[in-house]
Image 1 (cartoon, rainbow, N blue to C red):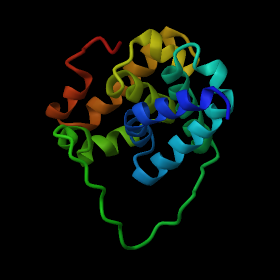
Image 2: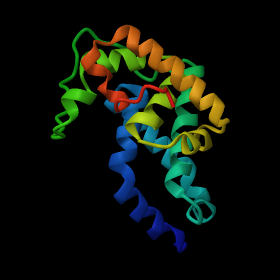
Image 3: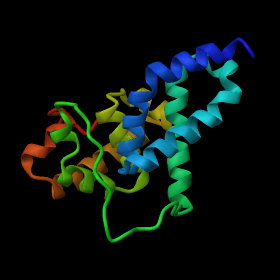
Length: 173
């Protein structure tokens, strides 16, 4: 067993809940989110020695976003829809009613994949413009323009009280 595995296991134990939430916000489905996180962690594990040196969570977030975008581009359909919905997962987060409200989830999921990734990283993960640009592998100007477009689209679809997701920011940055 290499020396990196205990560090990797500690990282997964400590950061999985937050990374799973990010994956769920990207996919909108708790089961796909688990698959996405597992896929990302499986991609990171062989390179953990290089990743663990510098900002491992940022690296894993980038792998999550890239994996999600590649699934979306392939129009991946891992499961078939059924006429009966499963029981929703029970989460005991007091802010879930704001974050998981049907209107907000539907509006965020309706965004194009790149805008959705920017919204998730900027407002749900609370990353700066620079950190979001690094996670997505693009310029800060791209992050700002994608954020602006995403917020414009959300403002057209959400009631005013749901717009509190953007933390009262009006500049789109």
